Length: 57
Image (cartoon, rainbow, N blue to C red; front, side, top):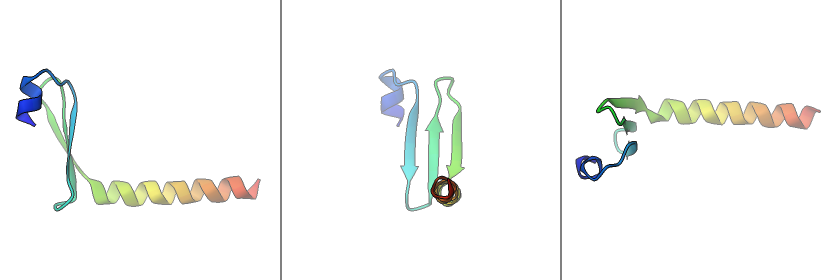
């Protein structure tokens, strides 16, 4: 990722599937780490809820 940052990228996502993490590299040099498994489960639950809501109308 450092090579991309040196070439001027302003925002980068690095997905580590093995450790189930996502790293966000920000323009100001900050790096944020997320546990992706929780986000995927929550998104799936939210999408399923929305499907049920639409079918009920």
